[in-house]
Length: 195
Image (tube, rainbow, N blue to C red; front, side):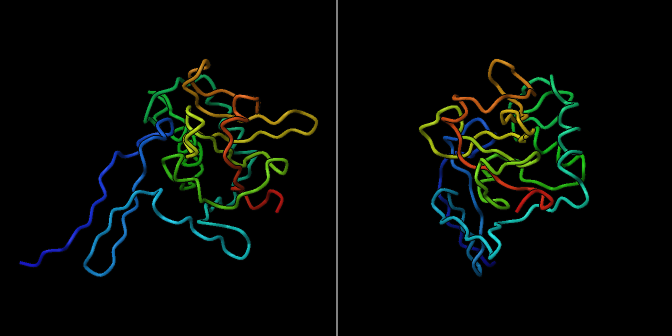
């Protein structure tokens, strides 16, 4: 009988977008060795020559179509670790459901968007870009919440998301001081948006 050596790093698993204290895992295989490592112990990936990390393919879907559909889900309650509109959404469950509606595959956890697509400057954000935040503890600088940006000329930036806060569900929120303190980055999803 042949045995495959396994190296494990033990710690909690990040299940949902709200608990950023538990590190995510990455599983890799080198020959006959399987390595399970905490996400935060790995160096960040390098972007390609155009500034993109791992790419999300949006096909012919437009940012406006995506946001129009997301808006139809306003009022669905918050539910931890759920992507089911009949039960409720956590933040990444909401993102997963919206993108999957258009056949667009995306990661299920907010932390897994950390190195997706192309990071852009917040002033350059357009409708359909994703905005990433820490979890509720802003001192832990790990992505733990996210939303879809809504950018209208002449209006303050806002985003649609599923929150466990006062709204307790899918809502549109202005980019206010509370979220400015938790802000991590903005990523471009749709290539039809600016460069």
